[in-house]
Amino acid sequence: MHKEYKILVVDDEEDIIELLSYNLKKEGFTVHTASDGKKAIKKAKEIIPDLILLDVMMPEMDGIEACEEIRAEETLASTLIAFLTARGEDYSQIAGFDAGADDYITKPIKPKVLISRINALLRRVKDENKQTAATVSLQVDRERYVVIKQDAEISVPRKEFELLALLLSKPGKVFSRETILNVVWGQEVVVGDRTIDVHIRKLREKIGDDTIKTVKGVGYKLQLE
Image: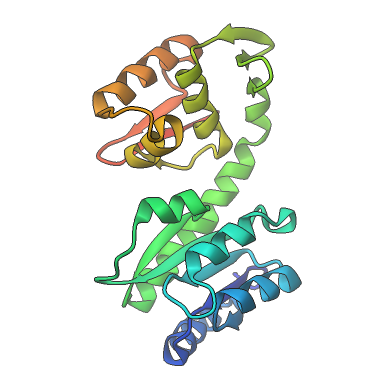
């Protein structure tokens, strides 16, 4: 069932690589491995994996740096990246998502749970691909700072524009409130959840109530039909 999917497992601990590889191969995935960030980048360019399981704390180059370099490679734009993090590590999920990660998985993890998480990620990509054609009906023009919906131009304030552009960058992906604040507002001002809610409400009024979905307790995603 999964033979078409290639997974690159990156970790500096040999026993973890062996354990993950064994369970992934058992499920029918094709598995490749690397022991640090630099080797991961080289291997990823060679095989173009569908998914990379990337440890955060590694010698030579850590997972965050490796993720940023991988995301800069055009040929790896559609590769999924899930960070592997040990409990208790001083690791910011926001830093991981900002680097371009699609998910994070805490070690140790039961094999069945890991497989379930991986399948969920791969399904999400399929769902996003189905929506690609739909994004044509909703676009952002960065040169003129206008939103285009079904050939009609909609003027929106800059922050609303940046918020929509972020959500539209990955339809179907849930963006946390923290990520939205960091990307859209950055270090400019101290804003709270209420600020995001107001901007989301205004966007919904302009582009349609059903387009931006609320994921309770997490954040928002763009849902295109």
